[in-house]
Length: 318
Picture 1 (tube, rainbow, N blue to C red):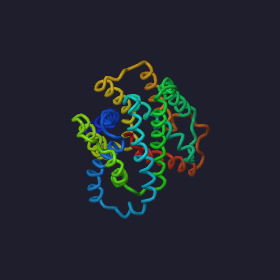
Picture 2 (picture 1 turned 180 degrees about the vertical axis):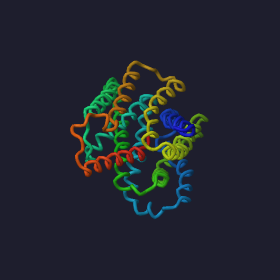
Picture 3 (picture 1 turned 120 degrees about the vertical axis):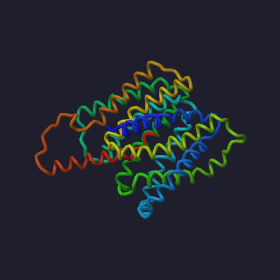
Picture 4 (picture 1 turned 135 degrees about the vertical axis):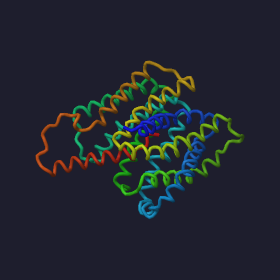
């Protein structure tokens, strides 16, 4: 990988590992709708002009229905649920739970009929990763955090479903246009709830910085760098940074918010990360039951790999 590729990789590893820290700070003083509106509006303000200048608006118009559904399951619901959950959960725990997205995405792909059979390695990854989620969430299910954990798991489900919608119904819609118009739609929808819950006094400086960081850094700048990273190193290499994000979330929570580092967090991190790596491994990691005997079988296998690669490209680790 080139030096530019490594720089982009390092930036994405940090940038998309810190939203949980900023959300935790922001919800201390402003409402959930305000957090989502600030993030989407600032992101849209930067990305929408770039998308309009790039053109292909006719493609956006042709896909307005799936774009609305994608926005609902990727931004409208998840970002509100995530912000509300962090009123009761630590940012590090939230980041670790979100790390289960690749595992759930494999299950969603199976239910959606992507046609790819899972071998023993990937099945083991699913079980290990889900065990990690259980280790992390289990001790909190009997207390007041159970609802918040349920909210984050709904976010995980939404993040896993959204790429399927994008791949199946918006394959010819460029990533920049998809991100820009999804953020714009979300900002417009959250305008009224944000206005209704507008804070009575000016939030503190740290909250304003957190809101600005969410919108300008973790959303607008992150998407621009994300697209550049994919162009520089390709999808399969570029998406490896998603395995680093949970570690950044944990370190950020400990360093800036004084959140505890417990044995449960360490164990769940190892299980979820290991499970994600195994569950999303290439088919070659599993021992094939039989070698492909025809050209048609090889073409079908290649098509499944292409679809899986496109799902990864559309997925936003947030």
